[in-house]
Image (cartoon, rainbow, N blue to C red; front, side, top):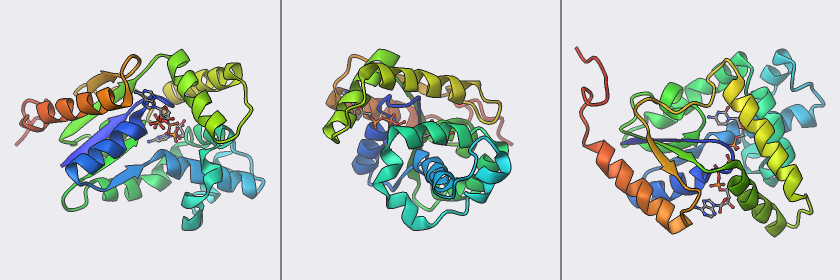
Length: 217
Ligand SMILES: Nc1ncnc2c1ncn2[C@@H]1O[C@H](COP(=O)(O)OP(=O)(O)OP(=O)(O)O)[C@@H](O)[C@H]1O
Ligand SMILES: Nc1ccn([C@@H]2O[C@H](COP(=O)(O)O)[C@@H](O)[C@H]2O)c(=O)n1
């Protein structure tokens, strides 16, 4: 079974995706980490994230980069949303994600374009959202927990900037797939969000291709 989980920054999609992977005993890929690895490599090599050729050169990143805690920083998240807008960067990371999604037994992937581009054929698709203020509150608490002194206002401004870039780009913009189920986590605890996600996956996995709007034949 392939489960696609999409949504904006700090909506809780990673939390939900990890819990679904545990529940269904499936491997999980946080696809944002790939774009963050490109961003961190651009920064380390002192390249220009706005230059497509520079960002493409950083797609050949060292696999060890994926485990670097610096990838989790807000600054790298912002840079990731700049490099991810380049069509050639997305193309360079495409096959790896498709392979992961379509491995034997299936997988859970979370990101921005899983249900629309990476696995349009997913058995279940969720779009996780929450208001910008609530997402900023959660992210701010998370960053404080890691010792950051960044202000709430800065976190909120960064989230809004990232939303605008991710939704406004022409290459694979952040958009809810037509056949995805919406999970608004704004007023749900983590436990309630996960329970709701499992219920939505159970509803969807029984659908036939025809129910999902696939033409068949
Ligand atoms: N329903 C919830 N209630 C309260 N806190 C939550 C909820 N869901 C997630 N969180 C917390 O919010 C923060 C962001 O969650 P998470 O990392 O899952 O978001 P994300 O959408 O994957 O973010 P990103 O796009 O930046 O990778 C984490 O600290 C997480 O523990
Ligand atoms: N499928 C994806 C996943 C991520 N991105 C871009 O990477 C940035 C960081 O992602 P996080 O999930 O770790 O926050 C994000 O803002 C997107 O620009 C993407 O384009 N497609």
